[in-house]
Image (cartoon, rainbow, N blue to C red):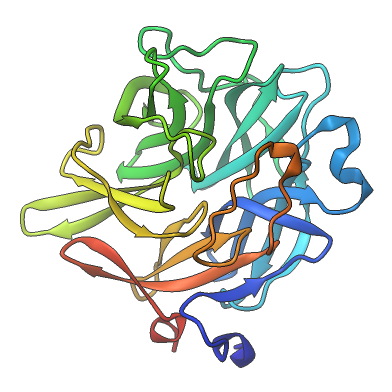
Length: 325
């Protein structure tokens, strides 16, 4: 265990700083052997950063034995030229499939418009893009998605609500230009998805993080006496906020702010049920909002980690030392 990390005088600890690239939206996954894998937006800091005018460079992969000591593995996926994802790929979400393999959902862009595709792996190291990509495109009945121009369909997060039943939550636009949403779709195999429309809406945010929209959504299922309560978290306006519901496809009411964090993932360590929360790119408590995305240069290029305890079914952030042996 890296004790120097735990000695950092803050609740969140900087556990991974790649050095030659920055890390943004990400997804931690634990393999059967106990090794943790991190998949994330890989964005170079050197001269490649602006090559071709592209903002994101690929899907990065790092690994760790204990969540504290991370080592870079490789760029495991890149955009495909002359395809629906030729401009960039980013924002991965990874989950175990019913057949024991792994499926990664990720965003791809073409002419600034976003869709979600899939890739599969047997070992978390070698990934094959699904031949029927893209697998998720917002429905025109509720979304203003178009094949050209900036239209959101990104930041997929996968929740298994029962054996062989999955929900993917993602960022999207509604038909109302002043209302953004987290949308959802359902699947039995992580490759074929049925649209379920918006599950939570909010006014478009013209200040703060989120490119005017709620983004980096995730859902945790918490056991209560009344049944499973679903906690939806997302980045928007004041940082990371949450809303709760007993229906994983319907959230309403005002959101409760967790903290000024960015692109957070709240995840559970299977062996002991301990929860953690991540943040990335900026110093904790700082929400950097550039006038233009091309001007964006984050203060920190790595991953922060803290612990989570549940108070009245809401996540309370605690010092990482409280959650490690």
